[in-house]
Amino acid sequence: MEIYYFMIIGYLILSWFPNARDSFIGGLLAKLVEPYLSPFRKIIPSIGFIDLSPIVALIALRFVVMGIAAVLDFIVGLF
Image (tube, rainbow, N blue to C red; front, top):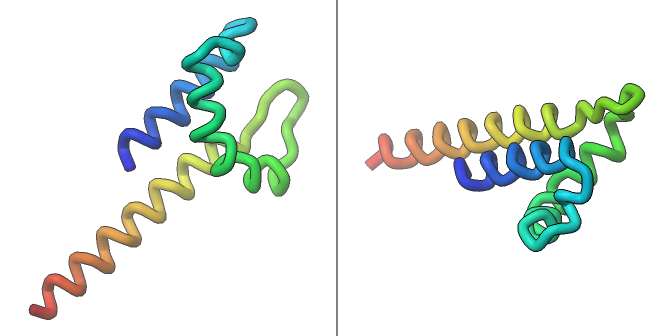
């Protein structure tokens, strides 16, 4: 999950540079990251030019990973 976390951050950094998302790497990251970010963009409106949805998406991803780790730790602790 750390790799996906850094992919989202890389995709956000590419948005700061003109035409960077049109490159091969930008297109590849868009195909991998946009399906996860799009539901957050529908819920959280942007404030001017600032899109807060990726920040919320990163926080949600972190909570999901922590939750899965806690459940797996609990299951392993039972045996």
